[in-house]
Length: 272
Image 1 (tube, helix red, strand yellow):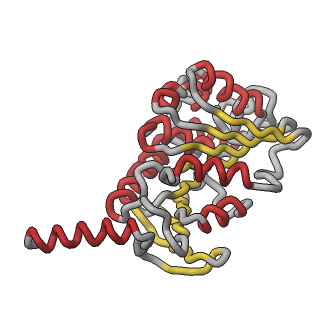
Image 2 (cartoon, one colour; image 1 turned 45 degrees about the vertical axis):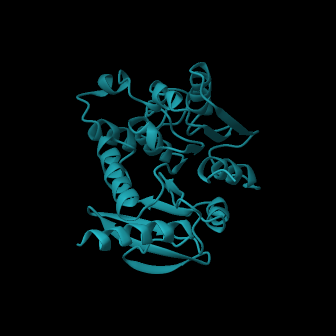
Image 3 (cartoon, rainbow, N blue to C red; image 1 turned 180 degrees about the vertical axis):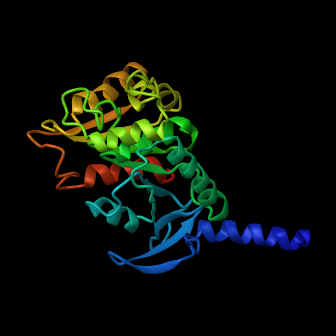
């Protein structure tokens, strides 16, 4: 390509992003709450991208760890503000090293080929917390903020059930297999859970928001959100907690999702 033509292409791309033009994603297109949902494969994994009608400057986006579409009100509100919503379907991988590698590959594709912002907001609902936190800890300079909803932050708590929670034997075996632990003792001694690896996030000043039920007996908040809050604050990190008195692991979210939406917008939209 001639130098002048290349320069024109680059300038056109920058101008289109600045004007709110959304990138063109491949795959099939359907309607999701009034917004176009694109579904395609990347490196053998299904990807979902929901596009806003008018993209915000810089193409900010939200990346779901798991359970895309559950309690959609925050996403719908964020789409209305110009954010893209992204989900990489990796069921049963529990934020393991293979899942983190797949996230990194998709991140490179979305930020280079499609021009999405360098720092997405991560949304970790339940086990989705393991995906979000493990990827964020590996790439703390690529994260705008993390919203955790009753998030799993230590696989010993769930699915291990080694604290006060019920545990999940089937998924605990998955942990042993995915991390290639030789035995359960190695998994229990593993120092790489999110509750143990918060320093990179604190150094990069990644803000956190956790919504949790204080009667959760599946992902007990004291072993997950509670430890995150205590340790993150000790490291100088910023975390906001929204407690739901008497609520268990379900229902997720808030009746009024305004605090969630405002938190994500504050840390993804450019300053006015």
